[in-house]
Image (cartoon, rainbow, N blue to C red):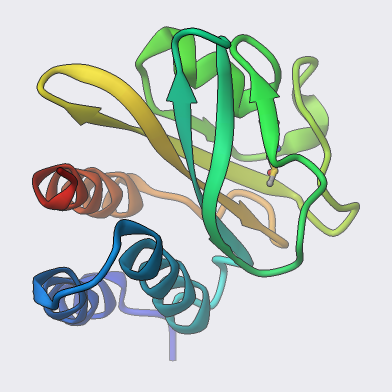
Length: 157
Ligand code: SME
């Protein structure tokens, strides 16, 4: 049976609301969200949150699920993540091999999506998702991930 994204994302939204409404640190709930998404969405093979610092012009990995990455810091402008830190736009990459400015984490990664996270209108971070299959991301993923980042921004103090 083909994956019913609508049903899956609807179910995940209520799980995410439960995670975000419980008392815990931002590291704890961001890690739980990463684990949930990586476990439940079959083509989300690596899920992480980076947050930026204006002073250093760098992104720092704050939470993730999947294989550990050496890219725990990424300069603004570098790779897909670094480009989103300056563009403030979603970046969907159906095929990473077609990208010039791309930082490879693993040879298994075929596609990637990065959605910025805004707090009070400022781009403060992003969710980054890698997939081992080509071109899996659709508008449904974008709408879901924008919803998620909005919820997280409301929870972050
Ligand atoms: N591929 C990303 C680097 C981060 S890893 O995917 C975890 C990029 O090009 O920015």
